[in-house]
Length: 418
Image (cartoon, rainbow, N blue to C red; front, top):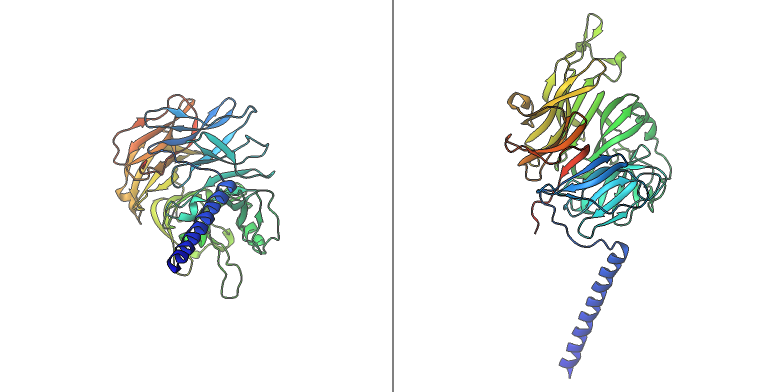
């Protein structure tokens, strides 16, 4: 008898556990029923510009284009990126509103869902780094000149930069709340944020700010100092244009065009000759790591002397962190960057001395495949800007598209379709 009672008790417990587990699965499904996988190995996502506006597209290894269902109204897509597992794509679009909001495309189900709301446009979604399990659900976006973290499951957003006196969590709507005294510090560095990536351990961010017609690269620790105050941002470089990439370990590659000092009245004496400011370099690529005290340390990978027209554009760090792909070129008399090719060099101090020029031409938007075996980039010829790939050793150039106008090409991070 006791055995039967014990058996019934055990079965009852198992039933409760099963029901509870089923309820949790149902609860998660009801909150965000985005199920299914999509085999995207080797596929390239991009934005194709058409007379009607930008359209997100995926191109498979056979050159076939896959597009999501389009609404009946006119719309414009921007800034496409992959989820960390390569199963979904996120992009900014006006498909359901006048403002650009974040959308998620499930190619396996051929379903596009709007994930955020609000009257302020939102741009540059990014989910990473790839090694971070949190990045499967939480990404960074820009909105109103601020950097926000977005929950892809619920659509809620939280202000990350500038830091605030309290978290600003919304249900996908307008951001609100008390502003931090840090705002005055940011005003000196820039007017708005234009780019951001997580630093080491999500405890800090690298960001680029707009300052009038120029850019400023900063590092912002999110913790408090010994006095319990929000730590202040640290300026890394400022220039006519600044571009950065950050790898999975929180190390940044920073490309600087047209370097200048923050305060001409406070230039170190070693950079003043005969009463004139002599810049240490005109353009450069730097490897920036964060020290134990949270301070950025910059090592020059490639430098161009002051007043030289040579310059650098887009940068992308290889998945293993040992190499950096750099768009090389020159600057015209109006300060416009003229790309001339792609070089790959060791991602270390003085690495340019052992660099290799892989591609020549009007290139841009270079990035790596997840295994580091090839690069994807844009090449402009006449009125067309097409997508190309090339082996990281310079072999196997492939024209992915033919006769279009494309932007934001990215190879899927998926390493296997299993």
